[in-house]
Image (tube, rainbow, N blue to C red; front, side, top):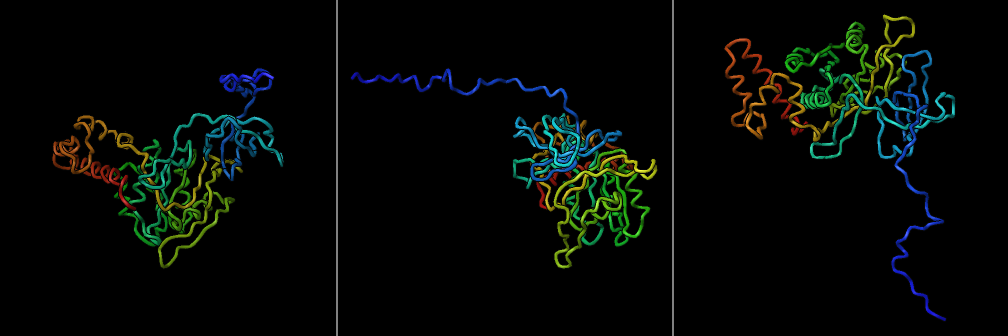
Length: 348
């Protein structure tokens, strides 16, 4: 019997009858998809609000479709979904697209970690909640939050809590030159809660802060049915215990509107102990300071813009200012910018 001669190329040939289906780059258009807002994420399941603000507004549960397996949806994302979008118990829709984001708030685990973690998408402003006492305020952490917000092209609101325990004047004077709005809240006053609400109405705001600063207490005052867990500050370490374990978007009630009216979203996040800025570039931070950005264009190539940078045009800009208020204002702006710039690599 003749020995069979095997063609060495045969094992590389594509099967003609029983092979896999031909691949195609075409993807379904999902023309019947509806758009929803991601308000909660829990172990691969997403809670969405459909028809935000309309008469048919409803919450549904969804999961990502296979084509989005490598794309992460986060709180604040606007997504297109197909399938059962009625919101009936036991139903599960599929997220097939994530719409273009208007802003992305990011952080890294530390300043050397190249992996960016998206905190929230499509928020208008970052609300940095800081206690004036118990625990003591940490300006390094506030600076880092401000840098991350400016990098994301977001406004910043500094909310100072526990004003019944310490004066807010020092922190207010420190951050006003940066263009940061400051609002003060007292634990024994409902008027200050309404003052905070005025800054949030009509906007999507994300709240961040250390554990124990009163963030969850503030959320519960702004959104009475939020029921966010609150904790206490450890007398020994001076730090709070984590009470919020996941981010969630909450409708902000509008007391001035008709019964049940809402105007804006409040996104509560778990308490943070670090805010890495490995992703932030100097140019992005400069863009938040229009006056400094224009002057910095005259700096020598590779200028760090820090205080020890040789021939930095920002120093010349201050020196050329006339004596008085103009020079004082420029000095304050440059000092504040350099403080933020230094916070990118400082230990907090």
